Image (cartoon, rainbow, N blue to C red; front, top):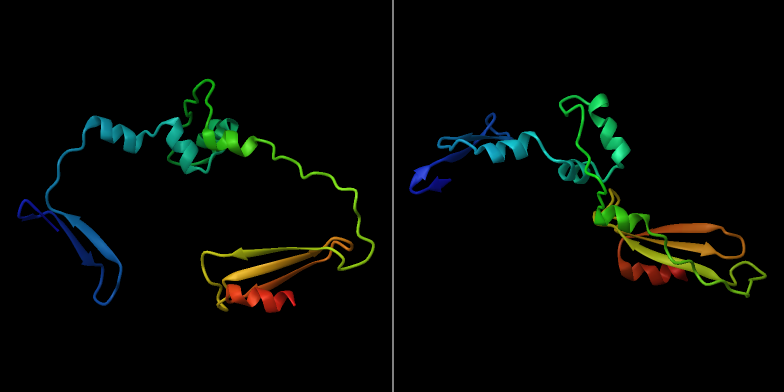
Length: 153
């Protein structure tokens, strides 16, 4: 890569025929003290996000059980994380019903789920059926969304 007409960054293969590359820099500026602090001494917010929003108690003890982290992370008073707050909210309950089914397959609940990555056997979707009377559940893997109708039949 070039900056101001000079080469400053190169990607070299580790060995011939290998797709693992090593990054070599030729020009560089000393990082500012502020940047170095952010890289080597992250704040509470960074730890909280990077470790998938653990509780303050977990973050308080994390330095004791891991290598390379500070022994004590400063936890701010009255910290309210929007993601954690949302996760702790109670969901509204479903309205109660007076109707009850009296035999199997009278009421079947269903849901179609798509996955971001195809499985090894090329399945991208799954459909789930739940019989309200017996509480039996069936899952059918599908390759296309159009296959949901034949699976339902």
